[in-house]
Amino acid sequence: MASTSTPSQSLHHHITANTNFPSFSTNKPFHITYSFSLNKSSLRVQSSSTAKYNEVVVDEEMDKIRRLQNGSDVRGVALEGEKGRPVDLTPPAVEAIAESFGEWVKNGLEKEKGRPVTDVKISLGRDPRISGATLSAAVFAGLARAGSVAFDMGLATTPACFMSILLPPFMYDASIMMTASHLPYTRNGLKFFTKKGGLTSPEVEEICDIAARKYANRLAKVSSVLQTPPMRVDIMSTYAAHLRDIIKQRVNHPLHYDTPLQGFQIIVNAGNGSGGFFTWHVLDKLGADTFGSLHLNPDGMFPNHIPNPEDKTAMALTRAAVLENNADLGIVFDTDVDRSGVVDSAGNPINGDKLIALMAAIILKEHPGTTVVTDARTSIALTRFINERGGHHCLYRVGYRNVIDKGVQLNKDGIETHLMMEISGHGALKENHFLDDGAYMVVKIIIEMVRMKLEGSDNGGISSLIKDLEEPLESVELRMNILTEPRYAKAKGVEAIETFRDYIEQGRIPGWELDSCGDCWVSEGCLVDSNDAPAAIDAHMYRAKVTEGEHGQYGWIHLRQSIHNPNIAVNLQSTIPGGCQSMTIDLRDKFLQASGLEKILDISQIDKFARNGNI
Image (cartoon, rainbow, N blue to C red):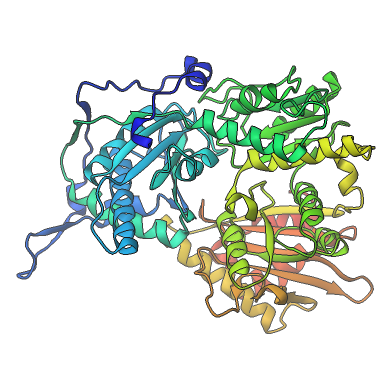
């Protein structure tokens, strides 16, 4: 049972020896004290004769909590050091959010079971960021306020947090991962899970709304005492064993079942995040040679490079290590290991469209005719690649949670969908509980690599599976800052994006047409669900396909309201020379200037690229 779990033994001592995570005593109350101040001029007190007490409403302070929502996550600045970005993910804010999550989980369980629920069990894992110790204490304080039983998993990965809900002996009711993914060391955040998977944006919005009121009503020092400190548990050893068993069972090596990776050299670049465990507790124990692996020890300052499979430095260093050691495969994890990228034996990076194509090739062998869901920034060539292998490609909203939830919905509607991937490297499989798990993705690739060698079909390695994938001739991303106060940025962004849609539907930009994916119930620029239960829209965005007489459809343009920052992202791809610049000129002249939106958007980057083809 979870309550009898022992403190971490092997993995905790192996990985966290040089980290600064707190050690919790089991026989003393755990004290957490911190304070914050409010600007008294921002207070507006409302009284009602029907209320049991006067409710203090502090609009500005409540907005601070609401602005921490980042789609389906919570993210903010946890440490000083960013110019122009004050610390907003404070211990009081985190405590209020954790308390609200604990209450939300309890209410959901009571509704599900139809009876009162006690001893709601919630686990917390974290990446090695240096703000983790202080903020984790705030999480435990919030969970205690909610009456939850807390379990401290220490250094962990995002997928392991979710698996702590499913894997015995843990099987908690919910889990929180403290991470800000690939963002700088000054940032931190929270991801939330229940047995149903990661929370959706509307669910996180609901929790933040509750937390905002709690936060605003605490006008003085906040002090919490945990009479029962959180129990330390070791999820990572169990999770690593789970991954090892999958590889052994599915490779089923005829000569050495327990060490199926004998004879393979695999380089891991963990970027000083939480991914080092995959080297020590998965690959090494399966017989792989991991000599030459990089940045395995956790370091919350990330001294070598950003832990991110899209980062050029991370990929370049991994490529160099693969070539220097004549390795069979290189692996790059992001900080919390929910994303990954790989490098083949020839040193070719496989991420973005290539990684989606590789996973699609593997999955379509196992599930012919399945649908693959991606965000709408993938290439025309990827669609063709999937279709040529008998699959179906559903283009959908940007945002890994959107892409995964679309796959869940399609399966419920009877459309078999086994793979959901965002171009950033977030990928989920139906067979793995629809969980975006960078380590599991790599496991699938490793299994295929070993199978190919056993079958004698490994000429060219894993890259042979995607040799037919064409790359777009041109691919560009531009940004337009929204020129308004932060509180109005979202509304102004929505206005601009919806005006873009209107211009295209009215035919005011010749050759531009909103893209669609009719087989998967997606229309109107790959944004709007046309089924009976459309998902709520967390950020507005549209993709338009662009055609002209001689070349037919030669590219696409995608405008997206950022949920991270007050700006609009513009992605373009073209199969002909100069196509992206031509689309940018039309965007500037026939839309931004014609509509007057240049008055509320900084179009300097658009104008520069339109004039000379350079960013």
